[in-house]
Image 1 (tube, rainbow, N blue to C red):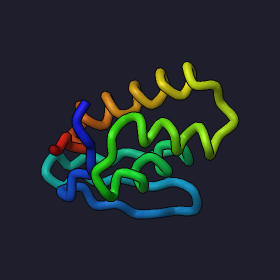
Image 2: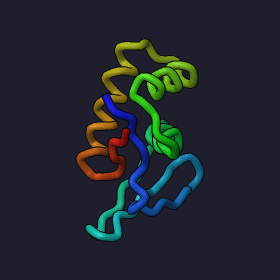
Image 3: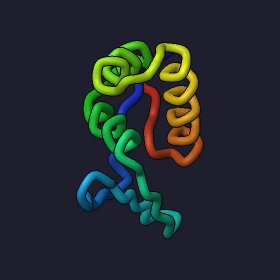
Length: 88
């Protein structure tokens, strides 16, 4: 899998542990919970899935299978909403 990084077309607003994403081109916004906000912050620089997963495993008390499935679902949703992009 290629590296992923934030799509700079999204604006963000931080409120406590949550991040609210604004897609000005589509007039939509998304609220990221604490874990999704952490992943978003890790995507400030290009990173592979495995690197992200290792950061999740280090930070949260979760088994590898759960981390893999949850992270894959989150990233697929972010890609679908064009919040992140794949890069080389």
